[in-house]
Image (tube, rainbow, N blue to C red):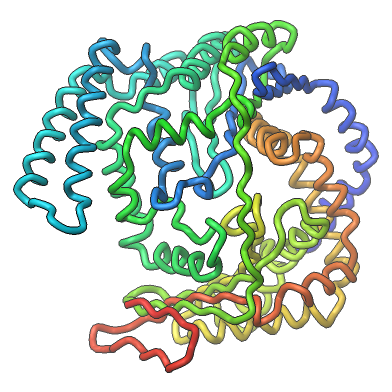
Length: 513
């Protein structure tokens, strides 16, 4: 494996001058235009096959969920596939009236059930039944899944979306001779979304939460870990939403959220594939340039206060034990951002990584061990996390000790020349590999344009990585990986006869049964 890695490194090093030249060639194939309404479009030409990949990225994620309405950004991602005024309905004019009646019925039910004092159970039941009847009436006009079915019938593959803490993205690939159909449908979805079946879909989101978090010990641990690490910034909230808040989301809230954040000025579209910009741009201007101009929403201005104590979460469960710890670090704009990427690669990338060799191969205390940066997002100051899964007969505190020994090595010993060079070579290799996928390139271009306002950061990230030194690694490790900046979480396995360990008075520890 080492010989193979060295051979790959040698080939890549020899090809570096040609690769640098290809950056200029890359720019020649890329067209970028910002319309008058603020929407930015990137088109990268690649004519090897008659297809293109598309990503629409909106600068809104779970961190923008209003207070008391966690899960709203994720909820809208679901609603975006419900169709428009033209797609997904048998008669929108009549459906709209039915949807208005449904929302009013829900508001009446919601107001009664929320009363802290004096709520009438009989009236709550009556109002809920009226709401259900209104929802059933509105459903009569729905053509389920029509938006996705039209796309797939016309050759679209990978129709999907995701919501992160930082952004929401919509993506798929399609035959290039269906470009105008894509433009019409996506512009229509941006201009005229219809929030049909909102409350039905809300139940789907709740079930998703039950599967990913409530019935998953690892999901519960990560959620509590995140909440313990952050006290002020919205990164402390559950991305999928707290149950009591998800059950209170309304279609009216979703419309307000959409109007504020889903503006052209807050959106980037990237297309990669068999597209000729001179022919495509007028078409895109026709459909997307006609979207109304709205101001770009202001960014969050909430700073997480410095952490001065070690925080811990302990979950007792009949589950596989696991240990994780995280350290606060600056956001992606920090001058040391590339240093964190190098440290991640050093301790986590494959069987030659430090954590694998120490905890898995040599000590046999972990089945798996790794680290990662940018949790739970990259846009705002985030966490560098390290974790391990103990082997049978071993405990999370052994994983913690092993991780801390490797952290001390980072602080006190320089990495070797070979280690650092191999990491830098891998970063170049990963960039070359990412350029080979239409889907991956479309997502990268959209995200970098959204974050930096400059797609060239695709190559700037490599430049910054190449400049990382041994001294940088030691400096950052000593600054960030300290106990007072640490949050830990672990699952301790219990048997049916065992009781949870009691918390000692004065400990800053959250215990969950």
